[in-house]
Length: 579
Image 1 (cartoon, rainbow, N blue to C red):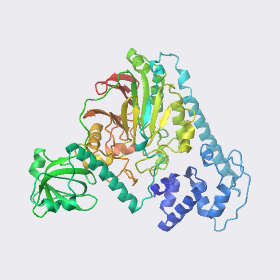
Image 2 (image 1 turned 180 degrees about the vertical axis):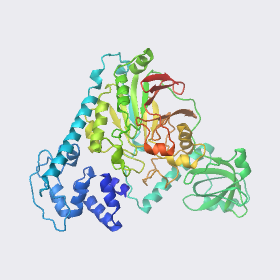
Image 3 (image 1 turned 90 degrees about the horizontal axis):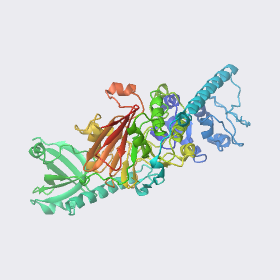
Image 4 (image 1 turned 90 degrees about the vertical axis):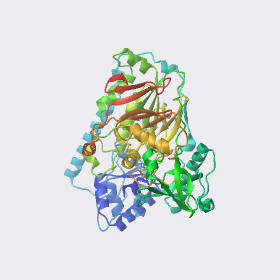
């Protein structure tokens, strides 16, 4: 139900979520349709709180459109009220009969036509005023970070040209075409199959034999096929049975248990991954006994570096708005960037730090999960982003920041995710040193190709592959590189939007693979690709305690781009260390 509203850029407060969840399916669908039709007229970002939920439940669409078609919801959510001259206000109190009366909106807030208890109004206003004062205080403290640092250093990176190129063809931003139809899913899986099949064929330098013609190869060996895994099972004798399909038919592939035990064949085949096999065709012509398995995988190479000595810092999962957000620690990191240093090594690094890559979850969000309001110090999603923007404004302008969204950000939950919406980006208008991208995205940073992906599929991979561990993020990341896909199995915890192009295919072999999501730092190299998981600025949550997950908050990976894979640097809660 949450996804239905998020797909039309409508967030639910926890109370609204509970109320809508208690409705009958027919009532929910009627509400959703009414909101959807309204957004065809006023396509602004909406947080469906109790007030507006009552509006949509108590009034017909015609009256709602008449009253709110020019309403600036964005200003309302950041505390400026509805300022459009033509905006009318409807009574939000549910009642069997509704009389719509026009009124002139207040300059400071939305007013209802019908008077309510003065005591309730004053209490609500006082609470609102207190929240606004707290917001102003937080923003004031954030905006004083740069001026609070007395020491200034010689920024060598200031004189180095910024070189950023986004590979637009692999970023879904502005290109989404899917509507969730059967035809969309067919096009999506065909595109995945064709792209990865081509990669596998290039690895073995031969074309795959069509599955519908396999019967012509009865009794023959060295037959090469490629298919998408549709089913996995075990025979009575303990051999692995894998069903693969292409665009026309399907066949059975048998992986003998002794070959799996010797390591000749893999144990960790996943549903929906595209894989190749070479083997012997049975006399019946519909079974292939595998001798070898070919995955698309990346090509082994030495890690690539650049000649210029500059540094990139990697962040993710900041979670501004959460009560567990480590604001003081994040402030110390920004102070470091502004020259508050205590050791010579810090000055050497900061003076040459040129880029920051952020892999999603800038904020904790609103309505991401039931009961989230209890975990937030800021329940206004736009105010959360306003804080993020204020923090980033305190970072020296010569440091270029790349921002990709995550599952807590104000974008659709299904991957691939577009860049943050324009309504949010307006809060960052004062920043000229920021590039906003989708999730996933490929960016050439000063000559090196970065794959930036938030990492929501990591939860699925850990549950499917025994060797993949939360405590060892590279053990998860390498499995995705092997399969050349960021979310191989459809239908898991990571939702997938059936775009006509599969943006989750790892189209390029990256020099750097940056991810987050699991709140644990990790570093590694796989066949020349440097892997970085950038931890978090959020303390351990109650959910993580229940799951036994121990995050590594306040630790920022920093890479020397002239020595990739050779040296890992980490800013660890105020102290720079060489790993």
